[in-house]
Length: 404
Image 1 (cartoon, rainbow, N blue to C red):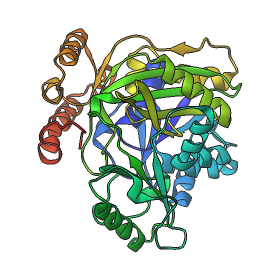
Image 2: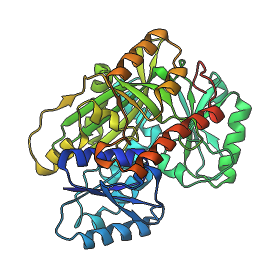
Image 3: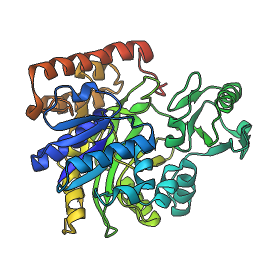
Image 4: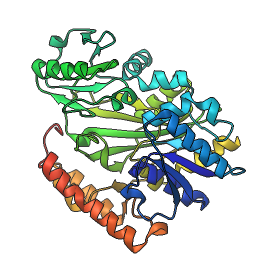
């Protein structure tokens, strides 16, 4: 089983590392450029292609299949826009690759945050109050009263895949908007850039980043959710292109969130990896769900480190082999930043003490791989990790009550 992963970020490396740990077989990474996570790697062949162009990506994948004829190739990605290409071009790819992913129809349903909200409401799963703004006619048209929202609010595209391909000044994965004037300004920039999707203006759930949660799941072809892992976010990334991605997680088991996500994945007929973002609302004592991504998350190494290796569940699914569903319950500290930097952003003394104790037991770092430890690589990864200090000093110099 040879994993072929599209995308060259930390999450792609972590997924290939999980497969390598499980099978001992090097995989393949397909990316636009050589990236630092894959510097001098021994666990994957690197293929450079114009992955942003669907035709070029499919051509590169078919070329890999020709070069590796007779091998069992499993195609995966941890980015919505690449998953979208794969599922929409499945007919061309499936003769050469095993593709444990959902159908095009399910992808469109799940990747729409607006549709996700409607499905959650039907299932009784808490979601934030949201006003969709549509750009189908070019100009923004709100499907609700933007003035009825309590400011500040959060802004984000309904489809991450659609948003990926539009450029405009001040582009952010998630926008924090203090007033109606800031909302109007952002909507104007989106319209000027030719955005034709739906943008969501959403209630801000109070609390800092440590109230955010992450969930990773796998649902197999039989319709069984075989893998679930949840964790408390300790710190998010804050550069414009990565805003909101967890930089550190402490794994904790949240049964209510696991039950809710299992019900959702069953309701939509999902298959493959899913990654959900949600937040603990201290006002109600409930977890509020924001979205589910139709792929494994960039931070997926926290699941592997907690004893739930994603490769095991893919293999069992593709082999049609029985596997006992697992809900991770081991406490593990995952981090891509130094512990000193992480602790600087933890305001709760009790949580800081828990993190310090977990760090003494060991830190799960996806890029620090004993099987991939050349001197050159160790030097590059050390510099990569240290560089986070500069990024936080520039984009998020001190912790705030909201994380913005």
